[in-house]
Length: 451
Image (cartoon, rainbow, N blue to C red):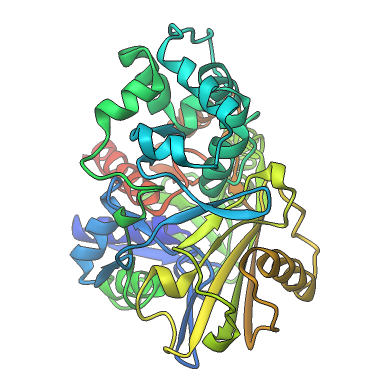
């Protein structure tokens, strides 16, 4: 018998892989729904995402899982680009920009996103020798020494913020973007390294590499649940304790399950609560990983409310611009089938380590602040005809300096618990594809240990 605690994407994947290995499994989810961040809502012909809206081909595990389950994926609509806010205006990201280094010089030189002084400082990367400091380095330190302060403020911070919701001054380079350090070591320059490894076509933020389930991310969660034997997954089943013995005891409010193996597929705080008294070092390590809160705000208008067409797929906004929204997706431009032809949807993002606190802000406050930004940047002045706000309170783990050491201590401690494995976004990767890979690795370790 195997028990998986947690019904998000990692827990569903772990349960599926155990079942495919011929193992009986029960999945326990405390809430009333499966899928975790995979959460779409349909209403009035709209398809609105509360959590992530994309999978990327450069991390294929998520797309491969969708194909295995028969979930139809669609790419971004053709001809799009992403924008960045500069001095209160939306400016297209220059063609060929990969994260923070230009691979197409002419396009970059023409762009107003970075000043001429900033461009000159970035070009010094071509001549500076590798000079990585000993030990862990912050992302900000790396970008500043290779490309300069403006590249950090105007490019790296807003782009990395969209992935980690973090502060580059605190984020560990080794734990977030180790490829940058490898490019410096191998090519002597980030720009040379990016150009040498650039794909044939790399425009803007490479949104042409992104895909989404045609019916929304809840369709992926539903397909995972449907692939399990009926009765495997139980919602409203909060686990209160996990105790070792001749077999593992998994304690719920009104019953105790006996099992040979346990997978904890949980956020850091929930996993730490179950590890209290069982593995204090792992519990303390998980609690030492900082977490941030974010909010998504879906806003809907009639297309007649647009004073001009929305440019591209959306924008990211540097923190130095001092705005409420760190980014916004022009949803109906980015993917097909998100709304009727007479409706337009924009999804804003707020919060994170550098953004305003969204924990206690009322819904109307979130909407008002988002509308103020969007009005100034897109010209939309009308009130939206529909709104969907979602808060993810302290769910975004921050991979700050020393993160790899924290992870090693947690994993070493958990390794001493025979028959128990842990997979969590707080440890190794925050994206959907990362969660798939990590859950599959946890199952392999669990099964190999008992082989």
